[in-house]
Amino acid sequence: MADRFIEVSLDKRGVSCTVKLLDAKAPVTCAAVWDALPLGGDVYHAKYARNEIYALFPGFAEHEPPLENPTVTPIPGDLCYFTFSEISLGTSSHGYTKKSGGREPSPVVDLALFYERNNLLLNGDAGWVPGIVWGTVVDGLDRMAEACQDLWRAGALGETLSFRRVEQG
Image (tube, rainbow, N blue to C red):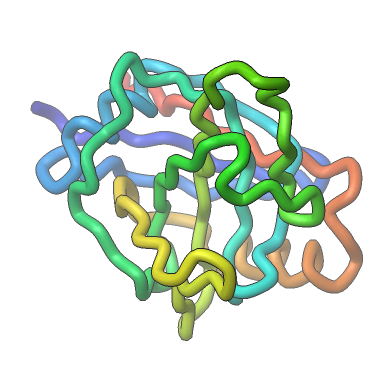
């Protein structure tokens, strides 16, 4: 299979980076994300994992991917995939809300980009939260990291994190 790439962008700030999908290490996750593109949603900056931005989406895979290529210590440029139930992390300040209304909770997919070092996926309420590393930034990480720092300091309100295919010609 030829290498596949996506563009990840902070739309309001006009900043993007290019990500190579790690098809050999996380084939099920890469296929699920690729088939769901394009995706975009409100961006959040992590409070505990440190140097992470993420967007939340309703579950889009027919079957949630297994924990392939897992990590609890993502490095700069890692893209991670997390699956939560609507109620498992029902904290509105993190972007998660309780919506199930008595029905079976739907999965919430968290697509995250890590832009700097010293990240630890440890949640005080839930413990270790391993993520699936499904992509790595191959171009534009410096620009994206600057924009992420601005997002942390100036705020995320009104900003969108988008994921789009890069078509190879």
